[in-house]
Image (cartoon, rainbow, N blue to C red; front, side, top):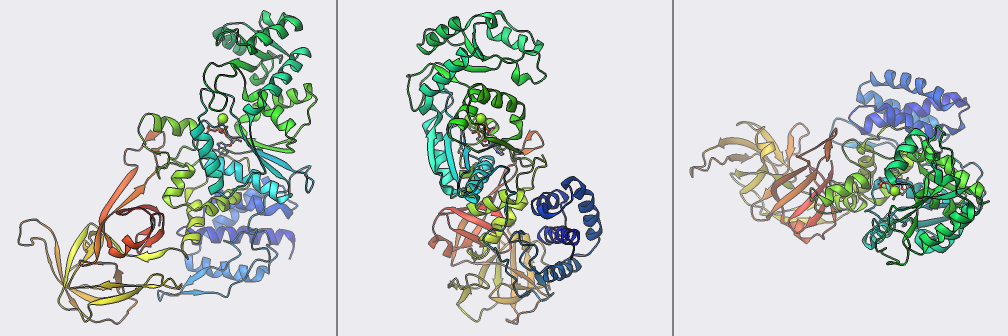
Length: 609
Ligand code: ATP
Ligand code: MG
């Protein structure tokens, strides 16, 4: 098989798997981004592959789902492990629906390298044992899934080359940083199973940073500017340089020392890089390197008044720490020129700078700048609110750290700005939850169901349909509850199966229960226990053994740019009493409802279907 055939087969497998996982829909952006990470061996330029991907998708889209499944398994079986970099999703055969409510699993074919389902592309200039990466968050907010993307990539590369990962708190804006945020970031990384080799604060290096400031001034690469901030702004946009630029080195040095000594007020003067006021790259128009910020720093109190900017700190810290590969998001692109100019002026070693796209989701802001105001304005009360993409929010929603890692790696490090669908994250999560979640019954908006007779007064229900996760005993009596969603579809004469209990025939649906409440009561006849595939199966709870239960369903925070007022749905109903025995934080699946994480003794949070 030629490389090109293999590539075509890879694209087909990815597309078919995507359709099988997502209701027969193939999402081109998912296929493209996955293909990119797997197509390293192909001699083709990645850009030339896109039309081919689109052509394959349009052909495959025409097939009905069952044919897609068959074709998937056929290609999978023929592929014979040449697709060794494909992920777990694709290196597993799919389950085929045999029309009999049973899923037949085709014998499993294991990837030879099943530990590393996703491989990031190799790094340019990387030597095994000598790679240093760093994750540099500013402790000015709670970490979110965008940070997870950056930190996971940093860590995976350090591990791939048996190198080091530095966690560096970029904390040189005293009024923005808080101890609470340092802690939340450290905890978030721990949850993601990221263990940095070194943890440091940029603010630990203030004296060193001042020293490099002096060096730059001495080399006449920086100067002190005393213009008023509004004028600086106007001059910057018009490309006009100011007279402060003409002052000599000694003048600048003595001013700099006075700035350090705290002899100036905020905005009275700044240190600027001697760039090029006519540069088309506005980041080079004499950018700010140091500014006076009065305020107590969470780690250093009032020790310093003069603080370096991100532009100054990033190259120096990376250079000093021996970072070999520095990753940052694409929006810093314009600042690359300045980054390398400062390193070169100071004769510091230059890391390889690598960019990747910012992670964004439709309707969910993945940025501290957008999340923090929601909390500050009291629109959202807690950082662990399950509607938020904060790591705490995702954890509380039941998203598993390993699913986040797989998701991030599946995106690889492309620059494409397409927003991945949150469903991809959910599908990784579902695979993790499926074998560890107990199955229980919950009925939303309960409706009473009276059965004429029952042959038993208690039954045993398996906690998981296929895995050994124990059984529970449920006491039953003639009054049960079913959900109104199911009740609405029932008509007199219908047969349905109450899962695990018996089959019933609907005898009567009484909307006036005689007490004037307008509550619906359904009467049914027990028609035996034979399991038939043609009968609708519904879940129920027993009157004797049920508890009031609430499920919080997070929805997108925004619809386009508009805040979604209905971003939290609350489903109320009854759950099996057995749920009270489970611990807070346990993951369960409410049958025919979805995966949930138990949040407290009477409520759970909906994770996903
Ligand atoms: P925010 O808008 O959330 O404040 P930031 O870039 O200012 O983002 P930092 O704390 O400075 O946040 O980010 C630390 C690292 O995480 C940086 O390397 C940044 O590029 C990366 N990062 C932040 N947000 C995202 C995102 N949404 N997707 C990918 N990487 C991100
Ligand atoms: Mg920042």
